[in-house]
Image (cartoon, helix red, strand yellow):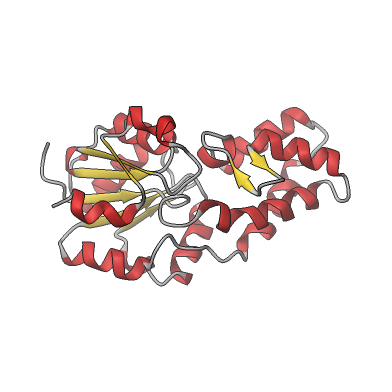
Length: 230
C-alpha cells in the first residue's frame, strides 16, 4: 500500500449523525407530499428505508445509499401522479434548514489531520449546495480541499469517478487515498477507484456485516482514524 496522502470522507453517517440529522426533515417531506395521508406517507417511508416507529433509516436503503433522484425515481414508480419538480422543491424546503449533528468536534478532528499533511475531501451522494451549507455551519468547510456532491459533475457513488475527481484536484493517485464511509456505496466507490485503504465506520445505519466484506478495516467511528493512519 502506498503512503496515504489524502482522505475522502462520506458525509452522512460518517461526519454527521445520519438519523439525528435527517429524520425530522424526512418526516416533514413525506407529510408535505401527502398531507394528512398516513397510509401514503408510510408507503413512501418504507420504500426509502425509513422506520416511522423508531425514526431510523435502515442500512443499505435507497435513502442511505442513493441520491435524491434515486429516491424520487422509486417514489414515482409507486405514485406516477406525483410531480417530480414539486417533490424536489418540497425536499429542498424540508432539508435546507436542518442543523446537521456532527459525529464529533469536526473542526478539532479535521484540523489534526490537516496538521499532519493530509489532503481532505468530502464525497457525498447528497447535493453539493446544501452540503457546503452544512459544512459551513459546522465550522469545518475551509478544512476541505474538495467537496463533491451528486450534482458536481461526477458520476455518484458507488462509481469511483468522484474519488478520481478528488485525486485530480489535489494531485495524488487513488492508491494514496483512504476512503472513509459508512455504507456499501461508499466502500464500493473506494474499490472501484482503487483506493489504498477502504475504511468502514459503524456510525451510520449500516451494520458490521453489511460493510465488512467491502472494507479493509471497520471502525466504530472516525475518531479511531488517527490510530489507523499512523
